[in-house]
Figure 1 (spheres, one colour):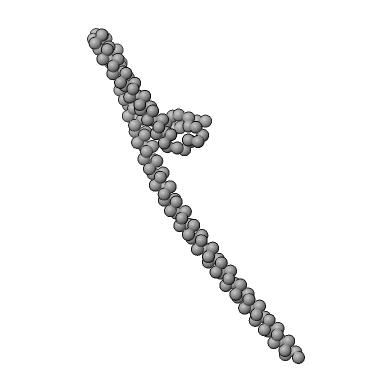
Figure 2 (tube, helix red, strand yellow; figure 1 turned 90 degrees about the vertical axis):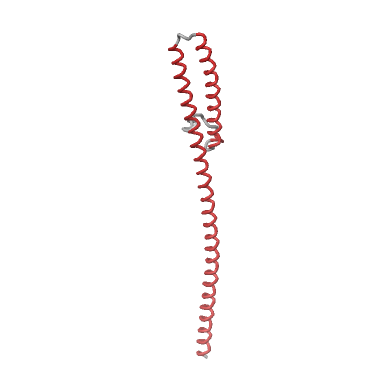
Length: 144
């Protein structure tokens, strides 16, 4: 099994093509990142109060927060993209269903036309047979 290119998780077999599964995974990641950000914010506040002179540690924590925010923003962007892709797929599915219905109607009309043509061919065969019988009967009468 390979990881999904959108949500970077391994999907269960029954969820392989389900964008809702990706959205749920990405939403979980967003919640995780938001919780991590909240925790980082509390930690930074404690560091600033306790170690005013430890500016380097504070700067590092701020960089980490920025990275987490960037990851969160990327996850939100991914969710937005997946949502739009889902909408596009739903629209495409509706279009394809309409096309299938049109082809089904064409197929029904073609079957009806084929039946009509079969009946017409049979009428011509019957007529030809009847004409052939008349000719044979006429020849039989001429011979007597």
